[in-house]
Length: 298
Ligand code: NAD
Image (cartoon, rainbow, N blue to C red):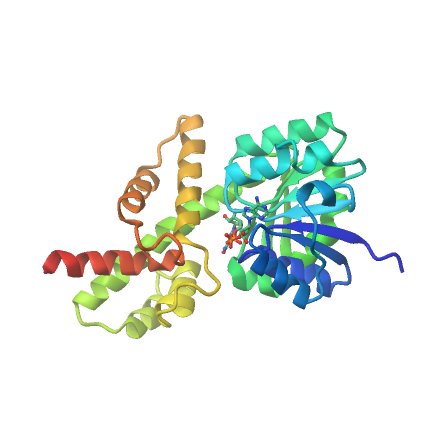
């Protein structure tokens, strides 16, 4: 059998389990991460390392990226030592990171000028979804490139959507999703803080709300996987990444002359209070609020 070679850049909370699912599906996967500990862990599960984005882009026909910020994505794709300047067609690049629609379009244009296929394909479903290969994937880009990418995307996710040929459209859906996840996260924090003040157990409130109108996937995720365990690092979507996405959602909204009253307030609130919580899971918004209340009462 001709074993297909896949490149994967960014072996972090999301990238590592996605790359490991590609390995499990039988692909030969070449991983790159600036954090060499992540590359070491990747070798232990059968991945190959020792490449840079530049050397890898001439080695494989398809490459996926899962990187933290729009700035880092832009540099990995467009810098002189990046993927596109060193890529040799035929090459398909799929960015699974959450960035801005502008960055998607800028990369798309440069890719096209170089004869390289590119999809902007942000994902949703948390680290647990990445591990279980049940992610939702929201793709912007050409129909034929989407069709070529489907087997790879099916390896990492369960619900694969082609949102449109405009490269920024999948990202806009993803930012809408995370605007809602952010507002729900703050709702959970405020709800459990109020429960504390009233002497109600979190479990009792969760049991009742979970079968009532305040129920949400974010309540279950944040409470069951993090707040209940008082564990905010393992499997995290960090508060810093949530704040990045809320800012991106606000930016998109402003560019479309719309208002996001709560979205804007949440950006201001997190910016003023994020110290100590940036690298913890977003559910630590509960700690952010309750610690603040305790401090204020002193
Ligand atoms: P992460 O910080 O855990 O992983 C990013 C990885 O990229 C890290 O291992 C880092 O060392 C590596 N990296 C940084 N700069 C690099 C470079 N120049 N070259 C190579 N590697 C580099 O972040 P994550 O939680 O895995 O998120 C990745 C992306 O997925 C983000 O855009 C995030 O918004 C999005 N996302 C995250 C989640 C989640 O639940 N964590 C869910 C959906 C989407």
